[in-house]
Image (cartoon, rainbow, N blue to C red; front, side):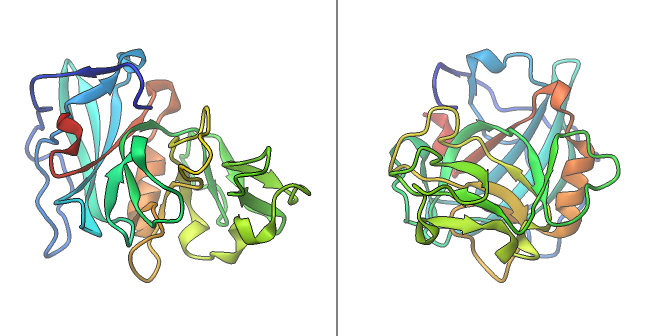
Length: 235
């Protein structure tokens, strides 16, 4: 979602007192330095920011925001984890580098091994034993969920979602390289539950935070996620 970007001049304004307190040692919620939004998303009124201190960071802060009367108000926040390889501009990312792509993306649908959480308004896709995410650059199903592995998608180049209990108990698909996939740029970038450490390129948070995000997110308000490292979204 880095096409037709409109550069804004000001930081988003947070209203103090509305964000949940972060865990000890986590950076405090601040007005996010997101200065780029897609022109076609002018009506969106929900935003998730995933902010890392720098491009080599593997931890940072996830905050979810509501826009009310022209102002952004922080609803909640939680410590976040990023790729083991740090963060890189989504337009130049290379598959297999364990980097998290920076940029502004939509959130096509939710999924999980766990039952659909009460209050979830997003379309929720249950993970089955036959659920795979194809990452094979030669496959027609590249960067897509498939039920049953297609013949042209090698198992060694795909992720069987049920093999990741815990991490994929709850998740949201991040629309990186999704609408018109570019081969070799990367596949299977999600917002999901924490594993043991840094991710392979996804953004992860605690299960409690993931449940809070799913209870908050309203597809009718067109939520987006803005992933940034330092001022990487400032252009």
